Image (cartoon, rainbow, N blue to C red; front, side, top):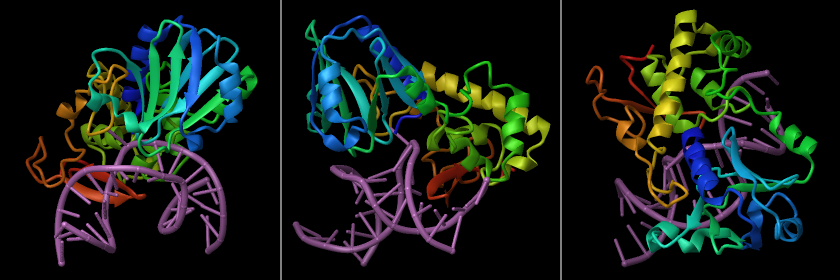
Length: 275
DNA sequence: CTCGGAGCCTGTCTGC
DNA sequence: TGCAGACAGGCTCCGA
């Protein structure tokens, strides 16, 4: 489900609400999401203080002081901090897979309908760093320059849409934002990476940054599952120009938006505006 | 290296 | 109403 803007929004909420709190107990309700041996999580977390929460790529990193709990939310994962304001609908209790109880009675719930999410616990910093070493450039970091982007683009000959989804090249972009970025850059999702010229690469870079930043400012995109850590929906779905708009008029030229299956994922684009 | 397909899971929606 | 099939924000593994 969540792409970079959604994970970043969740991270911010968790950091504000949970930073510095002490873990009292944890409860594991579903086995298949835990990559690390369950017993380790049950043994090591209680009593520890949550230093802060970070994001790298689409993953959340709970820094517990020489201990890192890492979560990939995949399609339907969500972290919700329980409080009085939450409605029963937002809590979706039947999908709660993992609970962290803090000493001040705050509860952190990991909810995941499809249980495709993954939770890891790293005790060794080198091991954690090795895990993250496979991930590519952070698009909102200073490393994402036109030359560095051009370099990785020209090493491959795959379609630009597929490239944007490849987390070993550039991180955080998923199926929604890939379509949105390519539309705003007027580039066809099927165009091979090595055929992009300098002007297209620069436009693609600036639109990538623009779309992701704007989506973060709007707390992400909610279709059905995604919620912020306070249970609220995102807003960016109001600003989507192509995603989920099959047969609706292109906001630039008025011709119908197309949907095609590309590498087993839906791709939305305007045939007329994107070349 | 790239590709296509299956698989992991549970649910919603559409069409017959 | 029942049922089958397509599809869903992600990613990994396998064989070709």
